[in-house]
Length: 432
Image 1 (cartoon, helix red, strand yellow):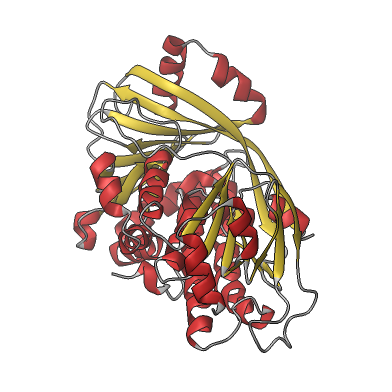
Image 2 (spheres, rainbow, N blue to C red):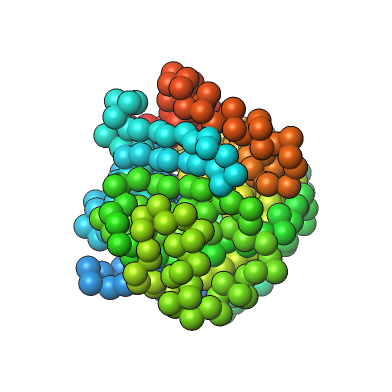
């Protein structure tokens, strides 16, 4: 029996003992939106995937349940990735909302810029979707994929990698080993670190980080306003930092309120009625007063960028590789593009009968994604610097820049098209 037949046989009725006996095509640590996308992208093409996740993902859905705290604004490229993985139908069956316009304005000047789907000839500019909805829809597909085996609530004890695998010519040579609590060492061609900003995989692989503390926090949650959202995402630059309403429905918006770190506890501890008043004020009453608030959360903002995305038989994706200032909502979108690019790289190597854990193969993925992610990170920092209201020379520049940019429709639409569809060559999963 060859290794593929052995894997298929064991996967039909897997046990903890079976898992340790299989040489897995990939072991993915982290089953969030990005890790689940990598698992599906490989598993749906018949590759044996072991997915480690800390806790079960609830795929049940009640349309009456409260809006969740964490929300993503998905681009067209992300929409296509999720459609091609079969997860979009699960998202639509639960809850998502298309937005058709974006309006940005500045507290200290009359400058503003407006983006319209109609001007671009697009049906919308993206979708606002709760993160839990995206993850549930992905896991719904994972449950139907026989090539994916899920392990829950097991600690990752260690990762052992090949030191130099560029000379590896066959699949019987050096691999990686993942030490899992209660299972032991599991052999695999590729370890994928999709375990978030504080990635244990990244730390175990001794991959360093370039970091920058923004000295800001993001306060998030959903609110109900007295005026309709007009299917628009509204963003205002204030003295404290950007404030945004992301349209979730006719009167429901997800807020993204960026404040100095010293105000984080203040924002979390305000009584609901006082919080509603402060949110209304921060938005300049653009949607009237806030009349109801849901659960809220806050987290510090830090830019992180892994010094390397890969090592022999290992790759990092999503927040394990990079985090970004979230003011333009690009974090999850960049992570999904990482997932799609890694899947395409691995599948191409398999098709060419090359070991996809080879460093030379994985370098293609790293070159594909690392530069693009760095550009977006720095672009967000440039916007953050420009709109910080701490230097008088910036104010007159913004006063002239925003109206000029608003009048240059071709340039404006090109910028939005880049945001919608990505800046680099799109992976196949991100195309229609």
